[in-house]
Image (cartoon, rainbow, N blue to C red; front, side, top):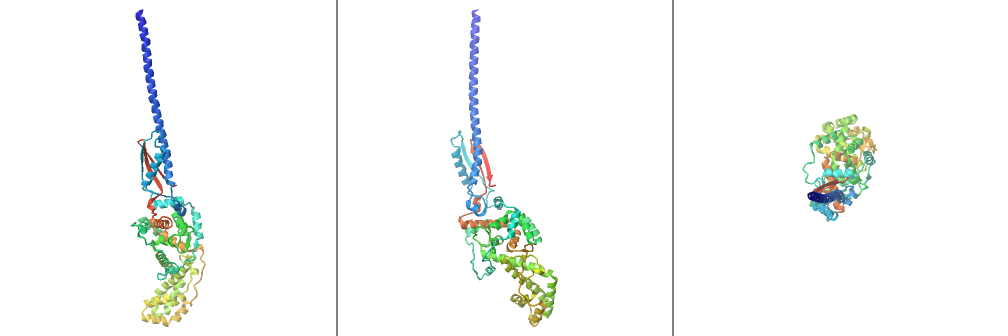
Length: 459
């Protein structure tokens, strides 16, 4: 009996010991679970804060865009570099995360390669994003024309006379050497040459110009909106150079040289097209042959000189009209022709050209038959002042747009970038450099041994 009683007592004692041990194990397990849960929650909170803050900080960097660049050209880009972005992100991290939730901050690293505004592709993307437009609106705007300069004149082409204007030249070597277009060895690739050849074959009326411009996107809207040329001016702020379209085409640091070179290009183009128009007109060709035959000995030379001189005289009046903002057809019909052969024979330019190309006997033959030649040519009349409708002619802007369409896309974009940089230097910052401006941000920050990567750009 005594043994039974001892056994029962021992049983209860052992059972009570097991319960205590089990309870202790449960308490330890609960404590560990609680600590783990707290640690996991803290990690989740820290991770959530990092992801939320990281996106906000990326937007904060982008929000510091250059106001002048935005107001003047509608381009959003911020000044800085990788070290500047790193400093900003580190300061944001210390302010928002340091000492909170036991977050261990490992700092940040920024990498901005590919976001430089000085990259032509990024510049094109920036003007597309920040220049909302519709093709129909763009076409209507170009069709309506821009304000004609009151001082537009071809007299500025005279290199020996400054006329009413002084030449603006960019002479600072630092400014020139840091232009986006400098140091680019080759502008043209195989695709560029093929595209230009196709466009030259399709040279035609103003509608064709607008078709090509519409296909080319926002670049031409940007040019029309922000840059001026010798005949028309943009509605925005005046640039350092007056002949900005001419700079895009020619790329010289001299304002006058750009104008002169564009003028020469226009003259060559118009003389060639006028010569084609002339040779396609049977009546004019027959008239030239008749006048040449009257000159007797000089006939072979006259058959060459007369059409060239006639096309040149017609071109002189074309250029006068272009500088007045009028339209000139690409290839002319008989009704669109302004001059006559009699005026050609009387012109000093023709006499000088003929004198240098003819022999003594040929000159004498021309002098002897000058009255008969003039009579055969139909006398001399003032050049006709013809109003060319929009569908049949191009104005100065549209001829220059055609020159720009023929250019390599990169060459055109780089020179647009040159103008933006030159004007920003002139207006606001002497040390403005597009390669120090960025259109996006990319960085990695380390928190609690984990990396968080973020990337954002202007939309």
